[in-house]
Structure formats: structure tokens, C-alpha cells
Image (cartoon, rainbow, N blue to C red; front, side):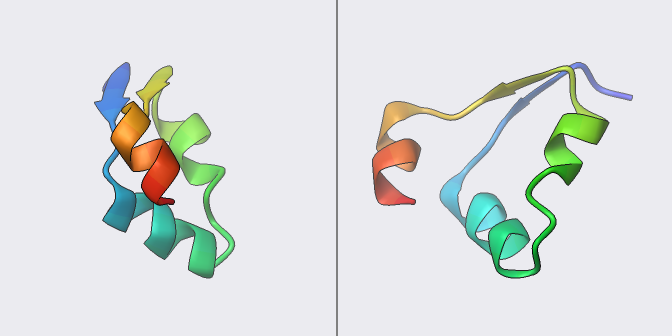
Length: 41
């Protein structure tokens, strides 16, 4: 299992739409969301 992921907006939007955004916390120890992605989502 990877410890780090850098999430892009499409991943976050898709997981949010199906109510599974928390799956990232289960799969990765650290999640980095760049400022541009944060403001886009």
C-alpha cells in the first residue's frame, strides 16, 4: 500500500459523487491536495 498520494480534481469529484471520498484515507497515509485542486473542487 502506498503511503502518499497527490489527488487531482477528477479523482476527488468522482469519489465524492459516489459517497466514497473517505476511501482515500483508508488507502493512503498522506493525501496531498494542491491549492489549485482544492479551489477547483
